[in-house]
Amino acid sequence: MLVKHKIYTGALCFVAVLCACTNGHTPVAENALKPVVVTDPLRHDSDDPAIWINRADPAQSLIIGTDKDTDGGLYVFDLDGKTVKWITGLKRPNNVDVAYGLPLSGARADIAVLTERETNSLRVYRLPGMELVDGGGIPVFEGEQERAPMGVSLYTRPSDTAIFAIVSRKTGPHSQYLWQYRLHDNGQGVVTATLVRKFGQYSGKKEIESIAVDNELGYVYYSDERVGIRQYYAEPGRGEEQLALFGQGEFMLDNEGISIYKTGDSTGYILVSDQEANSFNVYRREGDSANPHRHTLLKKIPVSAMNSDGSEVTSVPLGARFPKGLFVAMSTDQTFHYYDWRQLEELIINN
Image (cartoon, rainbow, N blue to C red; front, side, top):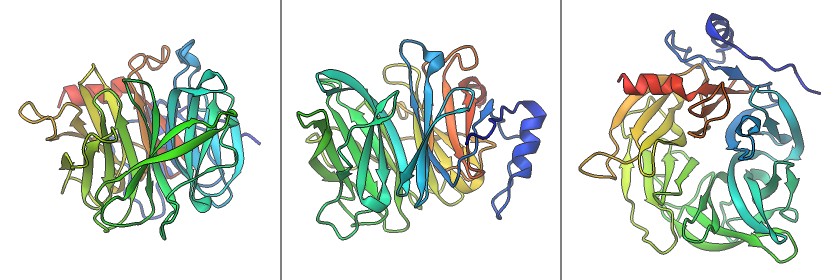
């Protein structure tokens, strides 16, 4: 059953979101950005969004969001926040990401990949119809004592468009915490994966859930939640050294969801959720002028999304409502919030 979707604007949005701030979470700030759209509520626990861009008609693009529960699901929303598809029966789906053009059954397929925590596997759906194409699931962290996958981000290699899934887990060793898999057709139209790399430090202080990949610059970022954001090369074989650790001391408690907004081939912004503060920290994608791996805090942007775990952003124009792109953030009121990028841009530019 679908619940009527909600589109909040102006003061009405602020009042509705503020009143929903319960369970001891930090109240939404009075100057918080108000979402242009709030999605239909999920059944259990909203966790992580991804954006699929319809290249033929960007205004018909979709938002995909996980419902994190033992009896969890995957929701597909339109740009009005209305549920257009609801997939049930998943065992604690956690994070989701999208990639374009995976060779499959003799054609190129856009895919959504999510982590299914209680089955220790990845699930792969063909977009936009959301047909399962993984043969029942792709096992991850095989042979390990700690396997439960949480974060996933997809890296598309510019040189040959090969697609890789970089996966994190609930807990694990202090090194080689993330595993990287190349996704490919098994010859029968089913997506399978080959392990190509183990990398990444882990503090052991909490967990690593949020991962983001910058395809063009070739970097992967992930949130070591009580420490900061770690940066590595995304390409297997290019090097295993940590390139940066930033954001230390700049979050109330947990640094969480990461998303990358691109203003050019190498410029833009990295947005990271300050979860307990109901805000997002903004850093330059290209780093500082003297060091591309030094990311200095530019701005803290308060939002109405509460205790946000996951986020996603695109700079692609998505119709009249989102002419410079869309920022999506999960909120603990079982919804996802859509923001017009111009709302964030104004605050960043007028820093």
